[in-house]
Length: 466
Image 1 (cartoon, rainbow, N blue to C red):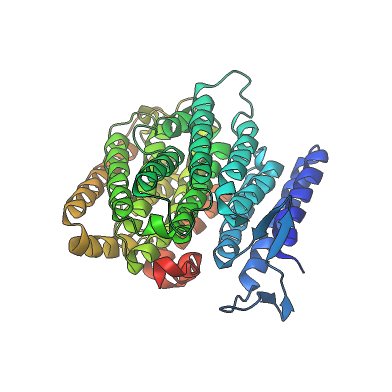
Image 2 (image 1 turned 90 degrees about the horizontal axis):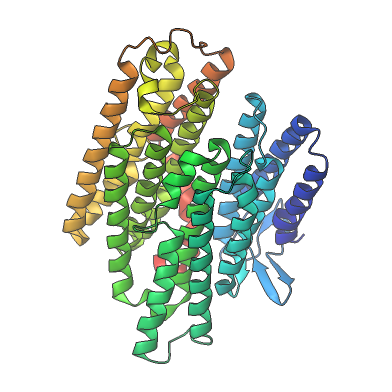
């Protein structure tokens, strides 16, 4: 059995097939949900022995596939990301079916995931930039669904990712044949700057962050938030793969200092701007930046624990923003505006929905009994030893997020006549958000159950964690 054929080519084929039969949307939605869960389950069942061939129930899985002179190689990190992406898309598709919301994520979400995994698995891995750009192009029609006019936010999104791709490819061409060591010190500095600038644009570091709040505000939440959750995760894992693959890059100490500083910039800018937004979309958009900042800050500490901690933030990012996205999606059904003024009395009319949103923000702020708290606490402890100034920046950012939490809580509790005629929550909404709140709290109380699997994302990167 061939792994890339099972997890990349077959899903891409089904994506095209589902698109052909998209008139039967709800049936296609169910089929996509089932397919995603089957692919995620197969990824769970994979046994990947050190130095051995992966297998399922004793059946060996060939992890490589030659394609157009390049190799798609599913290593241990790729198999773990298969679980993450397919599991998330499965739950997203199921949510679309439950709430009867049509979306181009059915079926384009599958082929989007296929390109993301291909970008992570391609060898030589410098070609990942080109494949990631294809995934971005696939995401554009999804973002522009029901938006016929030219959209400045999407143009920014395309511009920054396209320029980032060019810079990544330029760095690869510049150092062709230099995977072991660059030709000279000057070439090292130039290549590092080019590569770093490419990843800065991809990860939306200030001042290249403007497309995230713009996309969050002006496009369909149900489509864009899925892309905003998954795309930075793949880019971050890709960054770790670059560090592990280039000896001259991982041994250049300035790289880790830059990662730490960029992480701090994302944390401080994301938390500050989120605190003073008047639109709920933009508030969540800036929270995305804070989440990316935590991962970069952990990797910037240049320690085995730091690299593992950076992957521990992936699960909290998914569960927190999954809840935030769907609370906003369901609120948009009744409200024409997501201005915070229209959110008054939300706790009295939609208590479960409001509670889900508040608990998610509480978790993003790394409060106790939430999944973000354990890795953040460990990060603060490690920072106190390796990067004391960064510790105070991160503490200040968390304090600002706590202010955002109490601000939103106060708005939701403020009584207003705006919601007198609004529809109360139905049983589907109550069960849906009730289950999500329970999962979030459970994962905060028993974090090892959820975080132990995250270690395998970087455990194969021998030069970083061994």
